Image (cartoon, rainbow, N blue to C red; front, side, top):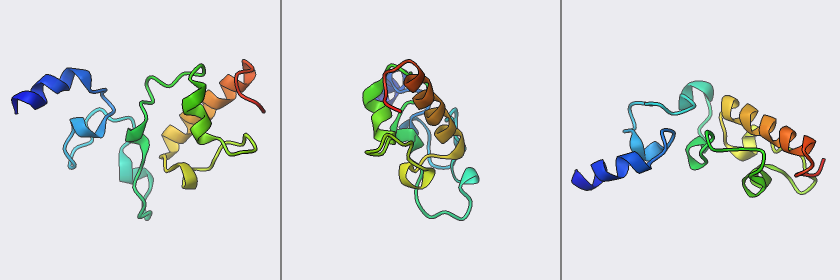
Length: 101
């Protein structure tokens, strides 16, 4: 327990490790409520959406296909809210000329 308390300040508020499986805590997405009827797991906790900016091109490229199209939710595994945030950030990065259209 002492080691877990020491790690708490270093974990972002959106990380899944910070909360037990029954509560959502301060996570950005409420999980299965937004993907009712889907058996696949959400991958929203694998990226820190609060720290995602239009300058972070390497992270944004993970959500683009080879034709520079934004991949749909079925492939990314994100919830609707997180997918909208990623899409908005990709479009902003395209407007600044950091990502191709």
